[in-house]
Length: 158
Image (cartoon, rainbow, N blue to C red; front, side, top):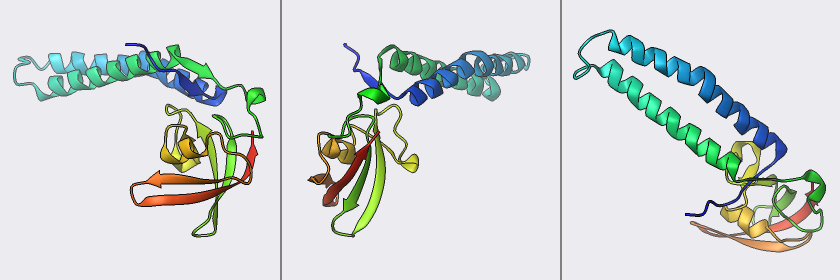
């Protein structure tokens, strides 16, 4: 199965690399210590501490593999390549919700870096997907479960 490209900003790349380093060095050691302590309790057939530590280890290794795959397929968004004419991955977009007359600012990022609480929305999300390719002054329809939201693109920056 071919892996999909993952779009990351330089900051997003650094954040994932730091997380991976932490998982591989500090957290792996902590989980190994938990397993060692749990084994010292004796019989592992009814040892809940051992079971919990092994589950934690499995989750940790799964996250490490996921991060390694993400980083292997990462396409770094060069800020100099981001157009201010058309919304693309890496664009900072100010939009107006036409119905509620409310302004919002979004940064369009790849799905691995999306964080709605920081205004970073995925290019694959309904809003991000609708905005991609739009120009200043365009109105776009965003299809959401509750219906359609109409946004007007006010500005595009890097």
